[in-house]
Length: 342
Image 1 (cartoon, rainbow, N blue to C red):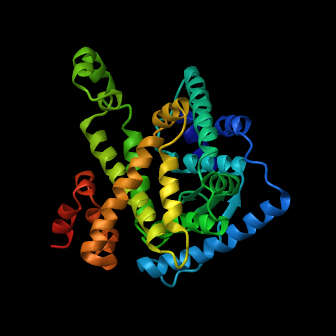
Image 2 (cartoon, rainbow, N blue to C red; image 1 turned 180 degrees about the vertical axis):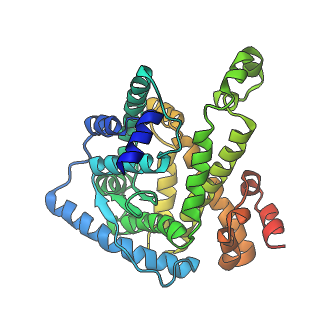
Image 3 (cartoon, rainbow, N blue to C red; image 1 turned 45 degrees about the horizontal axis):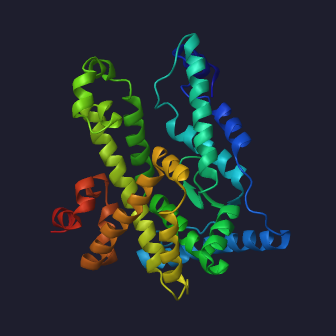
């Protein structure tokens, strides 16, 4: 960054989130993973590195996406490594999108937001199996080895099959962004539009607080303008599509690649619904429960469209932003087919 740019940013205020504090908070709060003998850990890490490449080959063959693109390995990380990468990815995705803070309170608010972000990242670090981050370091496919081993043990399924199954899901995410050139910029643009408008028009709505509390579906509805609701709907629809497509693919590759895929899916789906009361409350507050619904809704959309139009017909979703399904079309895939492939 040039000195002129730094001066301009300093004059415009400070970042609304202290990402360094977020990373430090997450590092302090990340819980250790399962105890695994060194030989078993080394085997799991080596296997994941190989399977990340093999899985993407299978995904390409099934979906027709990314044929001819170079194959790249994934990065196998521990929980602290994922937490650091997650903070970096969030910082990259929101850079310049959030309204900047000014004055003495700016630093206080940024610190508070940083601590909150770090707490969320630390909580998720014990649950995330893998992630493709298209927004930092040219794109990173991360596989969280201790969480994959821990989940495989809890499900009591073959380790080779489970790690390949996870790699199929994350490899699908990587292809969604690498094989569809416009997708990353479109996703980031929606996020920037939403975050950049977060302080627009809130005060007038708060003045009418009693009536809106009676009518609103919740505080999220209360604090959203019509523009924000529209952008959020598009983001939710896109995220549901991406997650559901990856969930469909990881099963559709089939038992030739993952022999115990049916057992894994049955047990993994049951595990997604589990957890104690406190865990489920936290998952709901952090949006994890909503993400679980996205898997199911997006996979149902994908299965219907592939069943009716084949994978080549489904791939029309990647033509451009205008062919992405709306939230209503995710729930009614026949409507999307009538609009896009009449």
